[in-house]
Length: 285
Image (cartoon, rainbow, N blue to C red):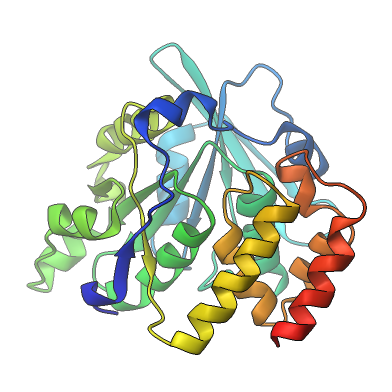
């Protein structure tokens, strides 16, 4: 994936609108088994397997953590918390996945939490020695949410292999904070906490970039579907990503449209809108 394949997101939240942005979706978090009592913000921790994500989770939460299963799933959920300044952050460790395409239970859990739970911040941990593989997940997360911080972990391994990563250039290209880390040595943990806090509080307003598919027919279909989705669900923060998943026949997203779950992201769904989108989608296909 080259930088030329990325385009700026014209719908990124301006600084003046940040105060109106939802910090998280409390009703959906409850449905997903997350209790936000006594917590100010919720942070999702995502990443490919073997990126040191669990090490980052342990470094941030210490002994303030516990595990269980996601509701209705055999997938293990770990959650904990940390204090930064005067704010209490709940941290949810999502299953390690290579994508959010919902082809496995792990991917479905991670995708549903980011999409429906709308965490205040999503931290994507990537392996500095395998960026070409790890950035695929980061770009998919950026299709769903603007509020992302990238943890560029295993920088010590990259240095040992003679690899140099320009984290400032990567941050400019992605439009979100990128924090170099060597979590096993505790390096970068404080910088990660600071970046999370700045995005959560609106001090840092992200300007994420989206993948430009450069296919006029596909972009035309996406644009048509986005208009229909935004008409039915005004204020939906990720209509383009939903449109792409519908065009890819994602059954769980189709269910979320037809049964009204998608409307709960904005609390503006009317019963008549969901079937209309499904019928129009069939016409687009």
